[in-house]
Structures are given as structure tokens and as C-alpha cells.
Length: 491
Image 1 (tube, one colour):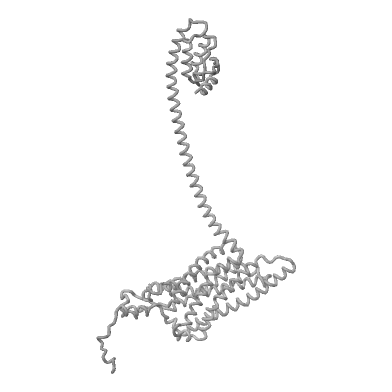
Image 2 (tube, helix red, strand yellow; image 1 turned 120 degrees about the vertical axis):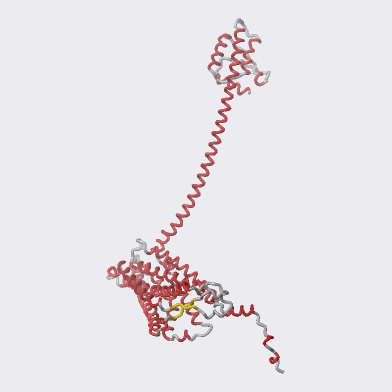
């Protein structure tokens, strides 16, 4: 019995959510492109942009007076341009994998930017190869042909060669600007999961780019003039440079002579060219494969191994453009000293400025604290002065009263002669109770009193300290300092 004959169209139930997810999953992007072309490529481009900008700022200084540094400055500028204009394409690949391709910001302006940036970055990478050829030839002439080196390897000639290479690069980039054209993608309009108000633009080959003569000419130039010929020149000349350096080292060891001062520049250039050969070899292989058989790339089927290899080759070329700064720092003694003198010293100056500002702030705080303390001390001194003035005024009042009482007693006792009675000691006792500070009137009074008495008066010390066993005779004619000292001792 056939079970399928009992199934009707009404028995089929389609889940809209499951259908939406399945269609959305079919437009998901490749994780390989996300991690290789997206995250890694974007990070390397940002690093290369910063490092090449720093290298260029060092190589154009007046202290770097050498023809080779002119070529290296041009190399840093071309690598900076390549890293900068690769960023827009890597940004699209850096979006999360869960975001489908039709939800990416593929606007008309951004697509046009991708076409222009792709042409400029491709030209800049080709220019970097020829600049490496230029400074390799420059070093070969200086090392292997030392008699004609000062005539040809000058800064003026290096600038001329660099300008010529940049002009040729402009002509090379011109046709690449028109290799692709923008078109609107309408294949997803019928799907419900796509916003119909959103316009999606992509680029495809233009009439010029689809022309077979143009394609074969471009592939031939890219394979031979960008990779095969310059790499061959670099390999041959570097081999001769290495041979010459070894010969110089042997002769310097035999005759105990120092090595040439500019040998470090040659070693730095050798390291730079070797790095270029290593990281540009995958791109050279891809170009030769395109020249031999382009159908391998056109008729490729999933999982697209050649396209993945092409992505890895582009990433290696980007790494080469971003890591020339490392070669300059490791092998370039002059470059390293200039870099540390300009940028590391700048950092130390910034830290010193911060420390000096902190010290100044602390000093200002200490000054404020000291000013507050001085103000408090001044206030305390003013309070003490006010209190002393009050005490002096009160003592003056007491002194006037005392003088009046004393003058009365002196007038009553002026007739008495002979030994002193107990009643005559009352002014003295009153004087002991009212010890006053130094005053001219007081001293005159005491002198007149002594002249009237003309004898010694015994005053027991038990009035001061309460000791009944010891009693001494105190002369009233003693100095005021001793008297004031005894007064303080009694109290």
C-alpha cells in the first residue's frame, strides 16, 4: 500500500520562522574571510598605518642625509598608502559572521570607495617592490662599485628616481580605476527578509575590465613587471652584496681594520628585501598561475581553495607592508637612535612635565599651609599683645593707687627716727605684695624711701615660701633684675 498517496497539500505545514532562518543561513558569510580578511587584515592595516607614518617622519629629517634613506622614505609612504586604502574592504569582512551579506552597508558611495581604494592599494604594493629594487641597486653601486658610487648615489638622484617611480605608478593605477563598475543588486528584491527600501550595490567587471586584451595585458604586466623581474633583480644583487660584505669582514679581520661605517645600512636593506621576498612569494605564485591558466580560478568549485590561498597571499603582502618598521628598528642603528631621540625622549619629557606639575601643585599646597600657619601665629601674637596691653593698663591703674597710699604713709612716718617698728614695715609689706614691673617713677620712689630710712630692713622669707626656719636680710637697694628674679622664684 502506498502511503504517499494518502498525503495531500493540506497536510504540509510550513513554519515561517524556520523558513526565514534557513534562507538567512544560506546568505551567511564564510568564517575564513571574517577572520583572515576581516579581523587579522584590519588589525595589521591599522598597525601598518601608524608604523609607516612614524618611520616616514624619521626618514625625512635632515639628520638622515643618505640616498638610501630617500628610497626608504618613499617605501614607507607607499606602504602607508597600501595599508590605509585596504581598510575599507577589511571593514566589511570584519562584521560578525551572523550578519548576512545583504545587511552589510553596501551603498553606492561605499562601493565606489571600494573600487578606488582597491586600485590605489594594488598600485602601492607594486610600487613598494620597485622601490626595494631601487635602493638595492643603490647599495650595490656603493658597495661593489665604490669609485663611481659618490657620482650616482646622491640624494638628488634618489629623489629623481623616486619621483619617476611614483609617476609610473599613477599611470599604472589609471586603468585599474575603470576596471570595475557599480551595479545595483536586484536578485534579493523578491525575498521578504530583505528591506525593499534598502538599495544594495556591488561592483562587477566593466567593458574595459571584461576586454580580453586588457585582461591579458594586465595579467602579464602584473606577473612579469611587478613580481618576476623585480624579484629576480633583488635576488641577484643581494647575493652580490652578501659576497662583498663577507669579503670586507675577512679583510678587516686580517688587517685589524674597522668595518665601513655604513655597513649597518646595507644589513638593514638586506633584511628588508629578504622580508619582501618571503611575504611577496605567495602573491607572485598567484600571478603566475593567473598567467598560465586563468580557468583554474574561474571554474573553481567549493570550498574554493585557490580563493582562500589568494586571501592568504594578500594578507602576507599586507604584513610585509606593515612590518618594514620592525626591520628599521632592529637593524638600523641610525634610524633607531633617531627614533628614540625624537619619540622616546618626547615621552620622557611628557612624564617629566607631569611630575613637575605634581611637584608644583604640592609646593603650592605647602605654601598655602605655611601661609595659614603664619596667619594663625600672627593672630596669636596679636592676641598676646592685646592681653599684655590690657595687663599693663591694669597695672598702671594699680600703680597709681599704690603711690597715693604710699605717699600718705611716708608723710606720717617722716618724724620717726631710730629702729624700724612693725607699723613702719607696712609699706614694705605692701610693696612685697604688689611687685610691679620696671618704671622710672617707681625707681625714684624707692630711692627716696631708702634715703629717708638709711638703714637695713629685715624681711623674713616665709612671706614668700612659708619657710619659718630660714630668714635672710634683703637689701631694698638691690638691682631690679635680682628683685624680679627673686619674685619669680618665690611664686
